[in-house]
Image 1 (cartoon, rainbow, N blue to C red):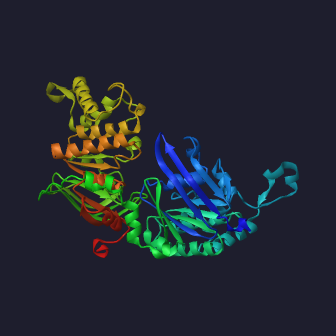
Image 2: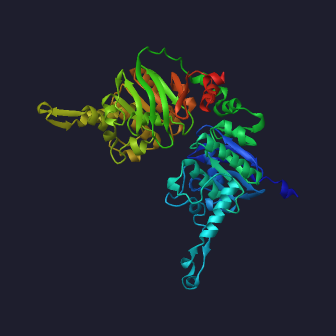
Image 3: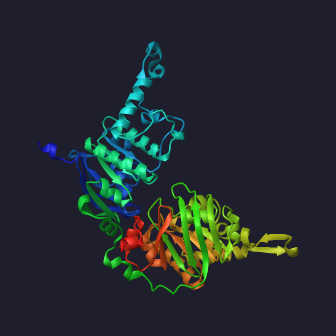
Length: 535
């Protein structure tokens, strides 16, 4: 009888560190059979790490494992790989699709588990001579689609599907596994239209009614209220609260997600906002950007001369698409004016020639010449674009690298940004993530831009390096008067550095508030409530 009362899943005192930095601290929760649990928290709150532990992902084992216990049906489990989790009846649908485009929905749903027909040849050649039992494959796929309760053509090729149908195919694949008891859905509605999202929420209720438990990770808090039985709110690696979904509100969840203890609250760190200049340095109208996963639909924004403007918002809402589109890295349209003059979109060189600079969130892919020295990384863009650090002979006919000037500028930024390196000749790839990020900043500072875009400047770097990077940006803005637009998933960082913060929701600006505004007001904007509705 006692076995009947055991929860399907229980996490006891789960903790995890990466390189000595705690990312999960004493996490405890239970999940009953057929229960739908909403897992919410800001980016970096620890949700993904917790799910990686549940799934036995390699990243956990390769970094020293975890503390605490994971129990299924009251018995401790230690999954060494996602295959172990699958055998225990746990399935997961990630944000990124893993479907084969040239295959049909049915073929994807039963991929690597196709029913087979044996023949006489099988006796000689073994399983290799078996053929796929198309009829049974089709029936099993239709069973899974019916179980999910959505409209999905089993014969449609994935390459021809709208994005919502791809999502349904992924979920159908998980629930076609006969042993499935728990399904984890990570941001499943982020790519869906309103109608598709409604269908998916209905499908989650269907699964729950059939006794399948669901962990539903989403930033769309209204969906949590619509479909979940309970809500677990995570912040800074801890569970802050467990709420009854029927008795909570969007405002309460938003406050718990982004709130901070008083000691580390913004009142302690936020500087007096400087008065805004009347001069508009950057004017953005009806900007759209086709950046996968960060689509911008219609952004209108004005940035004042000398301002430090923050752009925040939840993952996938479009905030990162804004600088990438303006700087010409992804297809964009609309109008961008710098000091009243149009900036040609889809032309990175035009932006650089207009004295715009960009520190990308993808420092290894876009930001650095990994196999080159620190000197070359810092000086090269300014050399190419502005003819800096060059000696010119015969009236500019011959240009030669000014090695002394390059060494001086590199040394200046190594000292100023406290870059830990063996020398200015060291290769960029040999530095830690935090020091690589400082090189990206130094490179953009050397361009002496009129306006600097900085995207996710502290992503993936330790606390000490974060403080230095943010301090360098603040000084650059305050001392040299350079206008900075910083895009970050960390609301508290924006509140420490910026004068105003714009929040992006669903590809548009949902509101702009002074940085000293309480965090919960930003939280409400993030989850799609306009300033007026929030008041």
